[in-house]
Image (cartoon, rainbow, N blue to C red):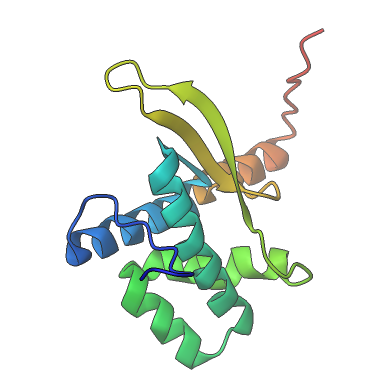
Length: 143
């Protein structure tokens, strides 16, 4: 019986599934959002929620657990230093799924998985800092 077991297997063997989820979590941490299918996004969402909870605890033990699961030290550093402090007052639900529609080839539901608050990627925050230093202000309002 599979009562109360909500595991997305996604038609993969366990090692492949762990590697795929770890790659998607590190991409979400590094770039701020990822585009994938609905089922992969739901599996990734569960995994990233656990990683943010580890990061909120913030001690060495949980950092080592996160590195063991994600396998990307740069992503773990960003998770613990930049992302976790933004979610200190939140108890869960750190990500959201935005539906894009169906993929043309196989009608798979495409979605964007992104952070709930406006956390952008490391590269874009560095670019914003440089723009602020130069005094350049962009106007994105199109009216």
